[in-house]
Image (cartoon, rainbow, N blue to C red; front, side, top):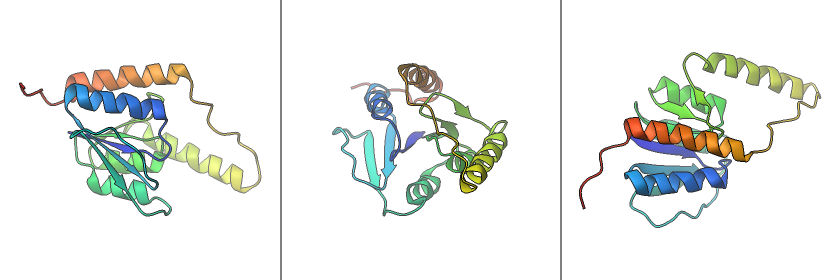
Length: 154
């Protein structure tokens, strides 16, 4: 089991939580982004920089993900592709994507895209708030308690 992170738009506070979790439970966390990101030195944390381009990071995550992995993303099409490969998907605000809700989210995204294309200002997501951070932390901890590999004795 590994954690793959769509890191370009991932809030810093979420990345920091993932770095601490990687060290605490020994799970591999791989950040994928178009731009360079500094990561703490750790054998459990990897960074992959992909070329700039539409969906380059998403495509690389889909290549790397396997059943049982955890993907961290707010990108709905990426979430759908990861679910198709048997991964679990958590957004940085602590909401789970699932087979039961992904189609509704894809449809809503398409509607919003059409509204924006017709010139309607749809606003955008709310600013990332401290409550989002708490919700994400709780969901991540519950996931790791159930799925993290057992720690090896030093």
